Image (cartoon, rainbow, N blue to C red; front, side):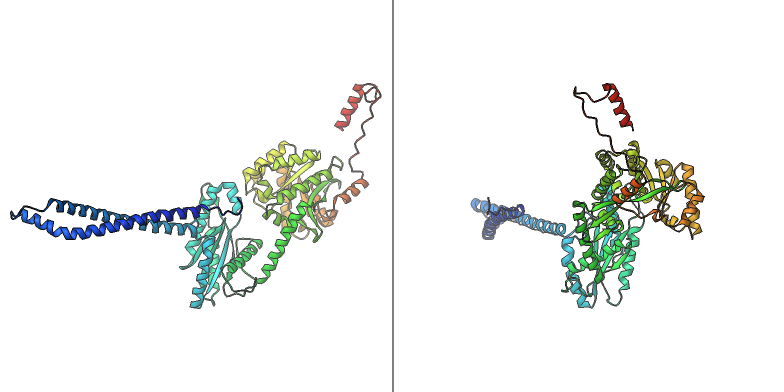
Length: 572
C-alpha cells in the first residue's frame, strides 16, 4: 500500500539481531547474578565443608554436613557453568568482530582482484590528499583502462577475462611504490593514487611507463596467448580545478584523470597523458556529438554516397562503392572519419550500417544489372554471429541479387578473429555474395590466410596508390601485390587513383579495377541516377501486367503462350 515504508532485508536483519541480542543479554545478566551468588556461597560454605572433610579424614570428627556438601557441589557446578558461559561469550565476541571485519572488507574491496573498489577509493584518496599536504607533497591520480578488453572477453569468455583482470591487477600492484592506493573501479578500469614530491613530476611519468610495460608484457591465461595494452590518464591535486573551480577532491581528480585517459585512447592507446583544461571542452563536444548521432540514426540522417569503380583497361563503369555520410541539420555533411569511430565505441555501428546498407540496396536495384555494389563492414559487425542472417534479410527485403553485392573486409580484422571471419565469409559466399579483402598491405594477413579464406578480390590500400607517382617503393609494392593476386587467382582493385600519371602506371602494370577522385568524388543517389540515365545504365522498368480478358484469362492465344512470356520476362 502507498505510504507504508516496507522494511528492507538489511533493516529487518538488524532488527531481528537486536531482539536476539536483547534476549541473550537478559539471560546473561541472570546467569551473572546466579554465578555471583554461587561464588559467595562457595566462599562461605567452602571453609566449613572442606574443614569438616579434613577433620573427618584425620579421625577427629563426623565429617561435613551432607546438606552443606551438596550446596558446595552445586556452587562448584554453577561456577563451572559460569566459566563456560564466559568462554562462549568471548568466542562470540571474537566471531562477531571477525564478521564485521569481513563485511568491511567486502564493502571496500573488489571481490575479483582484491583491490579497493570505487566506493572506498574516494574517502581514502581524500585522506591521502590531506596527509600529503601536511607533508608538503602532492597526490597524483592515475586512471588505467585496458585497451580492447571487451573484444578479448567476447572472444575468449568471461572466465579468461576475469583471470586476465587479476593478472593485470597483480602486475600494476608490483610496480606501485609503498603507501599507494590501487582500486578496480569496475569492468577493466583501474585507478592508482600516489603521493610525490611536487618538484619531481617525472617520478609519475616513469611510474606510468613502468605500468604500461608491466601490463603489456606477454601473458598466458587459459587459451589466451598475447599482449594487453593500457591507456593512462594522469592528474595532480595541486593543479587548478578547471572543471568547477572548487576545491580539489577525489571525485574531481577521478573525473580529470578519466578525461585524460580517454584522450590517451583517442591518440592511439598504449600511452599516458596528463589532464589539460582543453580536454574538457573536447569531451563536452564528443558528448554532444554522441547525442546528435543517436538522434540522427532514429531520424534517418545517415545516407549512402557512391564512388565509381572503373575497369582501367576498358574505361567502363563496373559498379560503385557505398560510403556513409551524415547529413546533419546542425553539423552539415559529416564524413565517416568523424562518426564511425564514435558509433563503434558506443555500440551503434551495427544499426547505423544496416540502415545505410538497406537504402543502398534499394538505390542499386534501379541500376543496370551488370553494375555491382560494394559495402564496407566494420570489424565490430564481424563479431555479430547473426550478421550474415541480417544481411540476407536486407537483400530479401530490397529484392536485390546477392551476386551483385560485394562485402569489403579490412585486413586488420583477420588477426583479431580468424575463425569467426572464416565462418562469416563462408556463410556469405554460400549465398552468392562476393568478398573483398580491403586495405591490403597495411595489416597482418599471411599467405596462408589468403589461401584458406575464400576471398574474391584484393583491394590495394590507397596509401600505396596515391604515392606511386613519386615513390618507387610504393610502385614496387603494387607490382608485388599484383603478382600475388595473379598467383592466387584474385583480381585486384586499386583505390585512391587521383592523377593521370598514377592511372598510366597502373595500366602498364596489369589489369585492375580502380576508383578514386580522378573519376569523381562520392555523390548521393540522385546524382548517380542522373549520370546512369545519361549513359543508359538504369534498369529497364518492369512491363505492366496485361489486363484480364473478359473470360477471365489473360490476353493471348492461350494460357500456355502467356505463361511462356511470363517465364521469359522473369528470366530477363
